[in-house]
Image 1 (cartoon, rainbow, N blue to C red):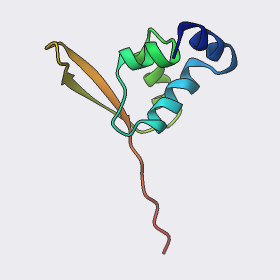
Image 2 (image 1 turned 180 degrees about the horizontal axis):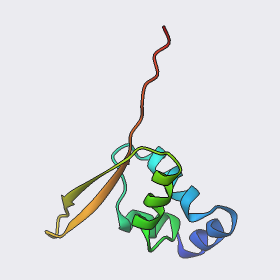
Image 3 (image 1 turned 135 degrees about the vertical axis):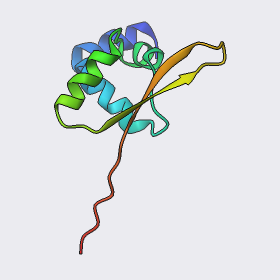
Image 4 (image 1 turned 180 degrees about the vertical axis):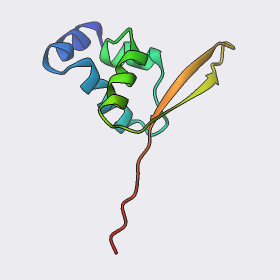
Length: 84
């Protein structure tokens, strides 16, 4: 996504909504770099805290990147509801 597309998206969708959409679209999870590129968000941890406060079950884990850096990856837990 280009910077222009991110700026346009920010006008029509809140960063928190954009992060939730990314989490739903990516079952493998997202990192701060994904949030910056796709949602224009520099504060992923703050947006995750907002989503958790709203009741979303979001898990975090520390992973190592290819360059050896340790970053957080967030995933949205999906619960399967079984009807009796």
